[in-house]
Amino acid sequence: MDLTFMRQGYRNEGLTREQLSTDPFLQFEAWFEQANEAEPIPNAMSLATVSPSGAPMIRTVLLKLFDANGFVFFTNFKSRKAEQIAENPRVSVLFNWVGLERQVSINGVAEKVETSESLKYFMTRPRGSQLGAWVSDQRSVLSSRKILEMKLDEIKQKFADGKIPLPEFWGGFRIKPKRFEFWQGRPNRLHDRFSYSIIDDQSWKIERLAP
Image (cartoon, rainbow, N blue to C red; front, side, top):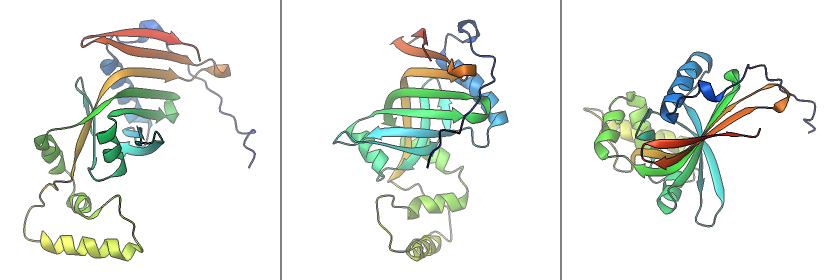
């Protein structure tokens, strides 16, 4: 299929160095607040990991917490992404906010959050999502959806009389950024790009990049 006819015209007035916060976390928060008004799922982020053989893999996960300590998502620890993070904790994520003609990419190191933090979030999930965490073995192969539904029925019966406990194989990862890039679409593909590279624990180097 020839897609050369598909073209996206960018209309944004752009991004200047003076508009940027010196703190990339504050800059992300400002953009995220705007994305929350304009995008259907602003916390969706593409997460890239690398296999032991060097093959990259990417998938979409949901950001559930961010602050000066990093960006947190939750998953099954038996999943392929969790196993790859255990082998190589260096990861990359991308937020693509199409309506705002913006992207933010973040490179950093992922580490497991404390069990207490995973439990705190797990208890806020709807009961159906809690049950789903127990049922979904992300590395297994299913011959039919019926098997998944049968597992769900078993778990429903098991926890029918009380609270659903946190599975020991489920929890969060916190990505501690080493680099941010903020991308703003501009006409004629002359986009604005700014990178933040960490110098030490409290300061960042900001550079404008060619589009």
